Length: 296
Image 1 (cartoon, helix red, strand yellow):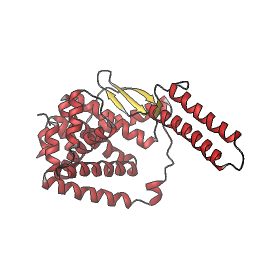
Image 2: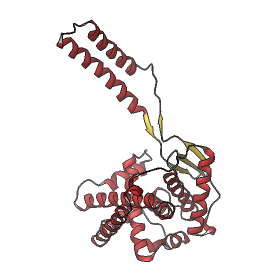
Image 3: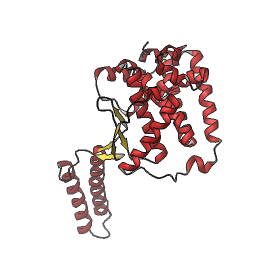
């Protein structure tokens, strides 16, 4: 039995489930702020920068996920490709936009250099022109910066990972490995993407709470806060973020970060509600094929 995207949306916007979601969010938030402040905000963990380090973290994430879900549901260790967190795509120093910005900067500096020291107008004009050129160059560069995100490629059984602090990288890899388990056990394609994302977020968050309580709790609070926000908007008849995300998903268009967060947060919220009712075994039951338990 497949769990379709629309079923998940309907479930978390119903009064009873929405109120339960608020209660869970309040409790998880209290648990996060009960951590010592240095555990909450200070971050001294090593960053995953090398292929060998990333592969070691993935191996641990797979081992922990297989133990949690049951080794019989595990999949072959995916290959791994490590990318920087940010990359600059299609940026050319000699582009027309940059040349125009440089000409403004040069013009502004020329006005400043040739103006009288006491001439406030020349100073202001030169400063404004140079500032406009600098701002233009920065904006052009910013538009070319791409935020790389972790990704699982099922056809290749490959995980794309990004350079992050080790607890965050562990959470990312547990998430993507859970997608691999879901793809083999459940499948479902685009129509089940919300459940796919919710399953991966649920497993990775639980594993992260054992590996690094701060990372796990922060991830849970962030996702539940977003799910509540989107559900609240829909309940009030305002912007339907769910419909926008689904429309792009079915059209095969590239979804934005926020549209991906709609799927991830709402899917996680439904699994979290089921987890509260049936315990952590909900994830193992789900991949056994007892998918209907999720919305009971």
